[in-house]
Length: 184
Image 1: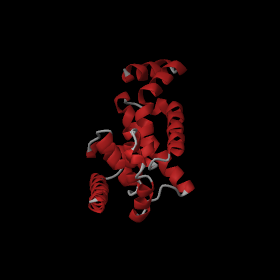
Image 2: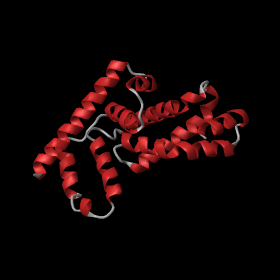
Image 3: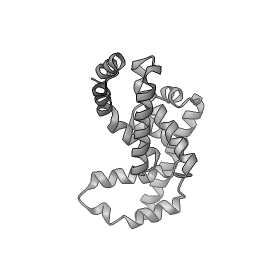
């Protein structure tokens, strides 16, 4: 369905077609941005908004409509990096900072709203990772991109993508294991 609206927007350039493109990809884009910002919803939404504005303005430069989603995430990552540099935000949390944050919220985890709590927990865990690790982990594990695709999308060497993925995964596993031992 997305390809239909992309083709229509490419031919007509009308706002209705673009609105349909947005409705087809906005949810995943926001999720990606939220993981990049380690759960900073307002900033993630700002990045997603800026991304969609850029997509609208530069759509004519996209030659291959099949590469739309990769192009979309590449633009979002660039906006994230610009905002991070400008605002000096979303730096890696130290494990002790995250542990204290999680302790403050431990009572909430026993509530009925597990889906919200689990998503917030994932976002907080992302704060342990640097920007590149967050991007690679999210693209690979959440959105299903291969390392080769991520390499192209983020314009990073394949070995670097694999290193960021492994290092990020190792950090998350190590932290989770320490949490489990502490809870036992």
